[in-house]
Amino acid sequence: MEDEIINRVASSKLVVFDLEDFYPKGKRILFDIKDWLYEGFVLREKDFRILVKEHNWSQYQDAFIALTCTTDAIVPDWAYMLLTLQLEPYTKKTVLGNLESLEASLYQNIIANLDVTAYIDNPIIIKGCSKKPVPSSAYIMITNKLKPVAKSIMFGEACSAVPLYKRR
Image (cartoon, rainbow, N blue to C red; front, side):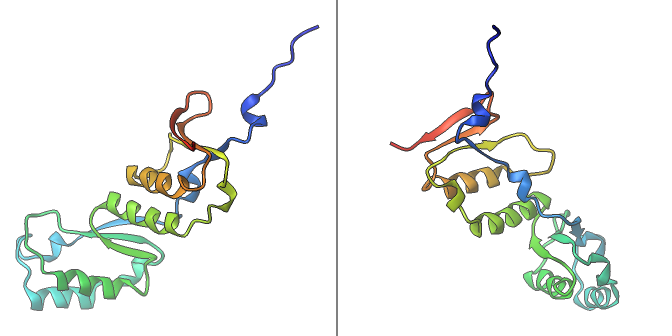
């Protein structure tokens, strides 16, 4: 008589939490204003306002935008504010920074609004590898969110998880 192989992970109360499952769908765009500046460094208000007025903002429909300037120009805050006002009717979200800060901001909103009742008193493994650009800060945020309700928290895959927290 052969011994039956039993998948103890599948039969356990272990809950796998995959941040990738919460990845918001939508195009990410890095909007670099350096090309809107005189010689890439000087913001001339009149010229800038003309560019803002004539730009086709509808091309950003349902996109996530990270506003930045990749030169060492000193850009006044009002310039980013003006761009944000133009983008607002079209975009899902606009932030100041790079694409990583955009992803962090998206996950901050998602995790802040996450209902964690399904995770109460369960051992949780936060899945590590992802194919989408999940920022490292999202792992910190979800750990803080789950700790008050989790029985335990691990990181990685069920076959090679790293234990992080166990309630006493």
